[in-house]
Length: 628
Image (cartoon, rainbow, N blue to C red; front, side, top):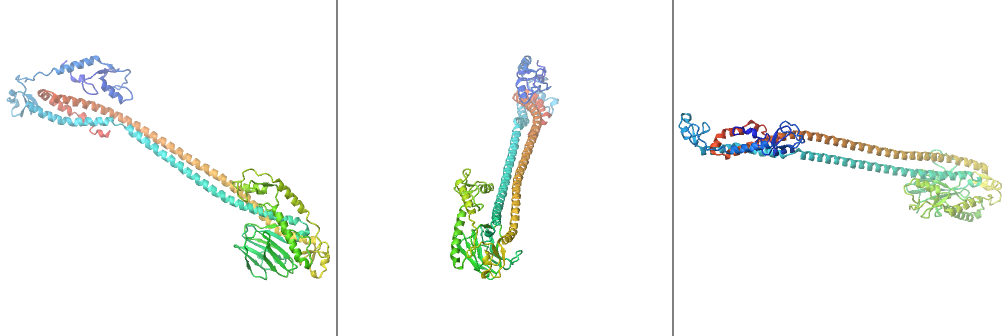
């Protein structure tokens, strides 16, 4: 037993005598604790030597355990007092040259002549100090290896994984904010375009409504009897910012710029003025902006007067001896058209000079009363007699079609006058509808046959010079001497033809506005479709960006996991090496410390072997464990 080598009883992991040895299925034995520590760093329970997996839980190697205990017991009994093998003297000295204990007799032998000799205790103390100094770096390296062993790359990997997720989360959040900003800008642009188109549509609709009303009123005049057709006119100027109204001599060239033969008032740049061939332009001082203007020509008396029918106030009067036929003159420079309104037709035209003033006042008063009465039956949108009137919750009434057309251009169904929202679907104003029908029926019956006030004859002729209907007796009167006459139907036909020619540009303009409205409708719809298309494109683009980020994040995470796996395998290999280093170093340190605790003679006997053990090349394999 004493001759058995110590290495046979050493664990290949810790390099020390087996402690509680166990045997694996591959027949290799290890300390139980060494094997368990080895397996904690492995995914598979395998043999540290042959790497074969353990097929069952390792069992205690009882025989080996008993042998190790016997060996340790026997080794502890090997300490008899050391004697010199040559002289049987105690080994009390130590030869520094031969590095071995000697007795006092050996000191004087020829073999140790001139050698340096020290007492055994002094030499042991000195060599123990040297061995301690040699052992200290190994202890420090052992501590370093143990610190390296507890380090793990998993913490760094989790930290990197968290950083990647946070970075991509911020990128996704940035994309969401950017997408919302793009969508908000798109909605704002769409809203601006919608408002712009709505304003244009409202303007065009007003133009169409005004032109339609003017065309209808003019066509009604054209369909009227010949005699009522040949009288004066009234116009609604409304919100027009640049207009002219008056009369024009028959001889004036009506194409191009009119330089003479024109009596007119105009509104331009916020100022009213009057001008005629004989009078320079004169500024008019009006307290209230005009909405409607009545133009009244008294050819016989040589007066052309302008008045405000809303306030029944005089505006301006031209005095002139008219010598030729005069025609209505209407000109509009702004985008808002003027409206020709129906006027009350007097039953007679010729009046006795003594009755002129009284008759004029009476007829004007009757005309104003009838105009006011007619206004009560007019819709404020189309300025015509109500057609199928409805009443809103604010008590205002409108034509049903006018109200629906107005609402199609609005986001909120509101009253065109007071702008209050309508809280329910407007019902029919049946009483107002019946009143309007009665008014129209009554107005249609107000056309008795016109007679001359002087001769009580029918007005069958029309004086082209005075521009007024006359009877056959008036034709031969001194007042109409050398005047030109036409039958009333012929004069009406000629004037209607001229009015038709004047009306044609308005009809063409109306068609143009209607075409513009259709184009505006198409443009508005196109803008909506384009906005939806752009919105879809933005969403698709950001969806692709989000998808790209998700794929990129997954690729980064996969690369991180691959790198982590590679590092784990590398670290596992290094940890195995470190574990072996730690076990070997621990065994060497423990063995050296045991040598240091031994008797001086025994220590000095084994000193050389201890130094060689400390200087083994294996301790220099991992000279820089920080690299782990």
